[in-house]
Length: 306
Length: 306
Ligand SMILES: NC(=O)c1ccc[n+]([C@@H]2O[C@H](COP(=O)([O-])OP(=O)(O)OC[C@H]3O[C@@H](n4cnc5c(N)ncnc54)[C@H](OP(=O)(O)O)[C@@H]3O)[C@@H](O)[C@H]2O)c1
Ligand SMILES: NC(=O)c1ccc[n+]([C@@H]2O[C@H](COP(=O)([O-])OP(=O)(O)OC[C@H]3O[C@@H](n4cnc5c(N)ncnc54)[C@H](OP(=O)(O)O)[C@@H]3O)[C@@H](O)[C@H]2O)c1
Image (tube, rainbow over all chains, first blue to last red):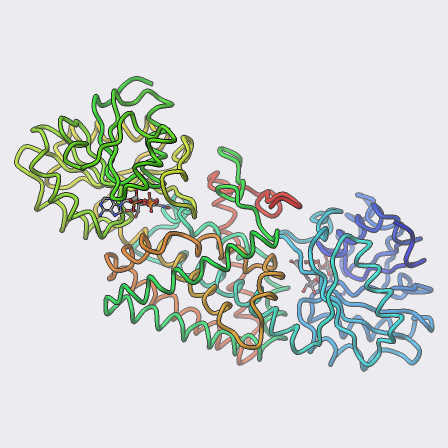
């Protein structure tokens, strides 16, 4: 792989930014990578583990002369960060974000983009339930999708170079408009997370079944929900506050279906339940065929592994 | 491990029964194992792969002289099976079931148990999304819990021997009464499955997001739901029809919480969302500490594995 950008600035040094750094290093995708995070603690950790060629104490320093600036903070912090760095960007620089929503970011971030600077929305569809500067690893984006959302501030060549960049990090890219992006992500990511959080919250809150029992017997299905319900609270708060419309729309559909199944259970309508449960198997099969999951029993969770 | 029962009969030859056979074989837990399944196809498959020492063409033949009889069919079929085999059981024989619910089974099965025969409810809390005679493997129950539900037809020594049997198959055992069993399982297993089925059903049913998109981008969270939503439709239909009360009670709690979160999203109450999402992380941590899951990124789903 050869260099795509000379100087890259990472603003925010969490799971996504650190994975980007290790992937850039692996593929020699950037000349120099500068980083900045809000807290001194995170900046110190980054320096200690060699995350970034240089960790700066201000965002202004990090973005100075940068060809590519990556906004990798929680969504709610991006507009403010953009405001802070705007005066320090060089003409021709490209700003991308990696946020999990798009319309709100475009609405709130692009007004602060100075004349002569470009902006392309991006969203790597990859993550784990861990966060922070030590959570990243070089292979996080390999064979995952990165959604590319061009805006009015995205000239064709800038967008294409951003796509080249993400592919050099291991991802596949696909373009989408912001509205569709937010709807797709509500379905494949935001609602599943909200539901997982709810399920885990309910289980934690029962009087008649103890937490100890829930934990002990979690392998029977519950466990699958807890991984995504352990994701970073700040990130997810911001996602739901900024993708409100699509979330509420999809939640409406979800509760509608859940009520229909509840009714079938209450009235003893076995046929409806059987038909519903049969239909959902096909999707699983397609996901396996598309190489988006493994068919190993128990996801390959090792026996006896902790 | 040494022999626990001389002659064992497996009625139903699916995932659970076949795993029991391979685990019995591994640990030399039984003298002879006879099997029976409803369809000739399944019986032929079982004979071909060496599942059971002998596969019989009737349930009556299989249970004749058996010391232990295992009901391993879907829950809805068990009362009928019990009726059929009752006249052929020897005095002192022990019948167990492996069904995912308990109160209904006890209510419907035990009336058919003949004088002098014992019955103990059991529920191995282990499974995969696969079913049928070829889905089983010897390690399925290793370090998993098997819940033991004694009934009025369970003398102390019969119950203890059943516990010894399950431990010889690799499981840990815990006793519980039927009502509590059904409530615990509603929380850790039945509601998670219902919700996963619902989520997958919703995603499959949208006009504005295509199935192709859902499949492609499923790694963002949705995918975790699809595994359990691929489980056997007949088994799950029976579970919901026979654990109606606990399911409806828990569903009520779930929708209550979901509506509270939905309201927080609608009104922009970031604090409530953040507090909720923080609380749920603790449960995940406890599950990892209890050795009930692995902390590997992506569950150890290998990169590029199919
Ligand atoms: N995690 C995922 O699964 C995933 C997947 C795709 C996209 N995303 C998106 O990627 C972005 C980052 O997520 P992540 O998982 O990498 O988060 P993370 O691990 O929690 O890291 C967030 C980083 O942002 C920094 N930060 C927070 N507020 C800031 C501010 N006001 N100014 C400057 N830096 C600030 C934090 O610094 P401190 O450590 O000093 O607080 C931290 O370094 C989010 O927008 C998220 O929506 C996440
Ligand atoms: N799968 C799990 O995750 C899991 C976990 C714990 C407990 N359980 C419980 O274990 C039991 C079996 O589940 P499984 O996953 O092993 O199911 P499975 O793989 O679908 O196998 C069911 C077996 O029962 C046989 N059968 C169905 N109806 C019958 C009838 N009327 N008479 C005789 N045999 C009949 C089937 O025979 P044919 O092939 O000929 O139709 C098949 O061999 C269920 O009660 C379930 O609730 C399941």
